[in-house]
Length: 132
Image 1 (tube, rainbow, N blue to C red):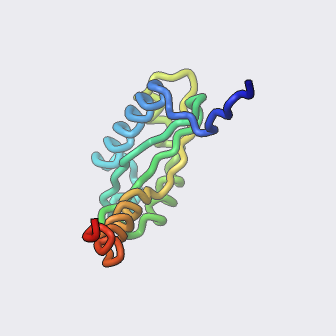
Image 2: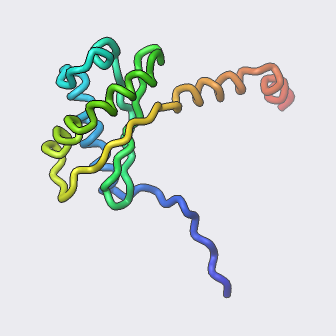
């Protein structure tokens, strides 16, 4: 019997999820307290909705969004400039053998959800729903 291919994208383990949440909480704490001394970051309200970790827990991808979605790229650049300080603070908060390297990415889930809502509210879709 031939083997079935396993999907290449495995769901994250419980440990990845737990460590990701710990990192997310520490990043949110750093941002809300103003511990990161950067004028660009201080001028914006930054939210970290999700942190994903690689299976070996050595790479963390933090998704960030600014209030109103403005200047997100400038905030990401500022976070990257302060990456060394942030990594040190995260290392103290999360007790791991190796402190994960943190990448900052723009969170696009809210934009995607808005796009899907707009599609569902379109006249074409409403017409199909009304037929049923």
